[in-house]
Length: 298
Image (cartoon, rainbow, N blue to C red):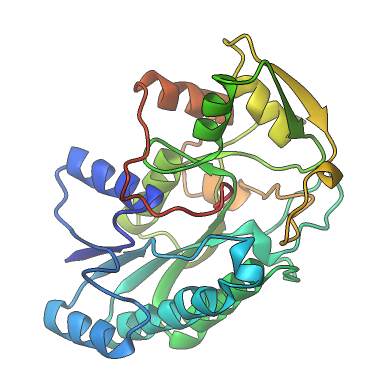
């Protein structure tokens, strides 16, 4: 049995569509069907169903809210919930695929350099802290796992930066977007494909980084991403410092992660421009009303 937690979120929905296309059966559960923060419920579900593969797409991603009113919920979902899933996986012998984030590093890396999987972690936000603790809980559980750190997630099935830019362009002639935060966008489809790839190829367990690729030497900022999104519109995009945007949680200055380990598994990673074009070519998909709302970065 394959289990997808957080099945109604942006990534969970993308993963469901991918498995449907490939004719792979699975069970998808969101909080109404399986509350991962309830250890007794998780244990009972795993004992009854004995999943072999668990794609844990459930997460609290409201980065700014987690700094204050969402702090307790972030701890429950990203730490306690992850631990509950990991320990249940270990008990029934399931492989766990967990999504994590560049926020565990803090982002203080010179532009032009990339985060390696074994880099020291120094999270500077509550979101980064709880996702880091979730990673630690998975390792401590003894379960076989793949932890995939990603960033700047966008896709067709949930609120994200692409939809935000498109909607703003309908009512604004000019938009200002930060050009001092660096990284690479990640299409949810590419991430879902990589999650399945690691399992189906029985890749070495451990930590991986995954975003869409960029041309050699190409530096990508949110300004660059926005410019590409709106290149066929009449809206002008102007660069601006992140100091102009007040935020409760500190954003990583450099989110660029090395893709060498992911590429070594023979997974083909499209560029972020190719991924964006493919996503947009699918049509004007909008997030449904029941989609879980989170931070635009992941």
